[in-house]
Image (cartoon, rainbow, N blue to C red; front, side, top):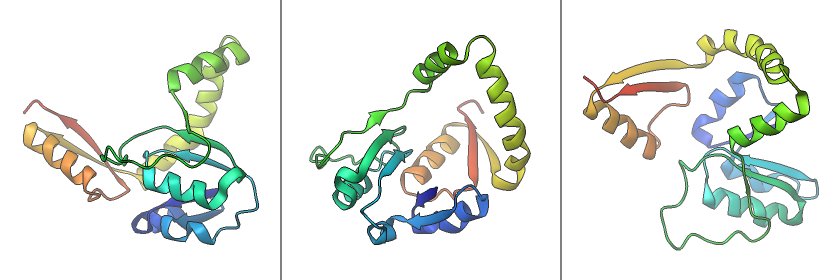
Length: 160
């Protein structure tokens, strides 16, 4: 499985050990376009989705969309040339899995996954707490402008 990330985050993503290969947005068109592709867009990066769909065309078998932090603010956002992305909404997915796996199925699988994941969090993430409107505004602006390092996670409160 490949991880796709901005060049500035490539070393961090490699260090996670989750992917067989890490490819930057700039290098994505160097990938072979004759293989089936599944793409899950965590950030809602409109320009990247268009770039991928132009490169892979009908080879994209699944295009999932989870977030919108990097969506183009332009009303002139380009239309996707091929398949529209499918929204992933966790509560809907949990209802589906609860039906498939039966009583306790989600809890058992979540517990197993979490026990392997949780011990790695201290190595992967630096949690930073902030309080007050100024702190919230600063982190918001830093996030919008790409100034938050990939290993930083913020817990913010408007209360001082």
